[in-house]
Image (cartoon, rainbow, N blue to C red; front, side, top):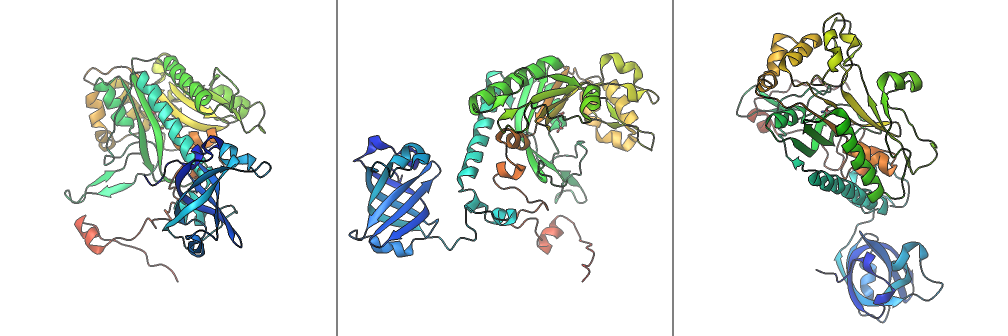
Length: 467
Ligand code: ASP
């Protein structure tokens, strides 16, 4: 390693010690024969000093902000009154530079990191934006939250299993991203909107407890709380579980997560209220109510469960029903008698949504495990023979000893955005798409070579742009 310490490790106790440090030039202040460089890495920032007596002094002229440098030097306690108290332990020391090496210079910056700048500029130069302490903190907490979830579920005996990315259309209600097949002309894969069918098939496969930090791809528009194109879900499924048991476990996980990783946050409810859909619609006019006691308090977190949803949305003009959650959600046992064209609007389901401070941060359900009920739901949705054939693998699998099962899929990015009180989902994603679903850093989507199109048997038919 080029370093003996990272900058966050420096403190008064090291005074008198020789250290090697690496990092980026945060600021540079020239006072004639003395130059101060604030050196920054992921863990902190420290003041370093070089004087004209040093044989490396003339390298200063080649150093600008955000250059990557290496220094050897001595840790010195800063004189009383000149400490940087905001920086904690590191602020109490400075480094007297003995040797200075430029690892990589930096061009003039396209924006000043500490000033307001347009989001598109931040995205185009995301690697510079990621160097800001706020982004370092967001990425660090994102890692810690996901690691906590993994460790918790591992202790509960869940298996983390990866499901395919190149697959078949899945019914989460958004448009699919499609991938043309070279080997099978005229055929397409779809990118998964969620691993819904795979996780249910894993239950048929006896896996019993599954989870995955799953990438989900949906062709839908951006919102402050929705990343266009792709996002991650904590996708989870369990067999032989009641709805209450599933919600109890998730609740225990989230309470412990907040207390461990975010100790400054305060939970409005240690026991999350379980409210019926009808009740919240009547009382709050929305199925994702914000139940915080004090909406001005940035550290308050009000989780709640919404349950007892109708199985179907309002009957559509075509006389068919649309699933409120998705087509695999199990109707309440006592409402099975209403599962017909006339009464289907009366059927309640085992859907459960997790809401947090007015955001829906997760949804799931206990699933249908009876192929006859599944078939009936397909009928009520108005599936044609062809559409039904599309899900034939599910109907067949459901004839081979299906365990009753259920699950949930909290959206990782949105959950972290709300937990950290960030203004947009893009603040907690390393390389997000912008509001127009473009990756400004890589410049995607982009045109591809004629030959690549030919390989996958595609001819473009683009409308000419109007001048
Ligand atoms: N697949 C569902 C979704 O993405 C979640 C679930 O039912 O587990 O909304």
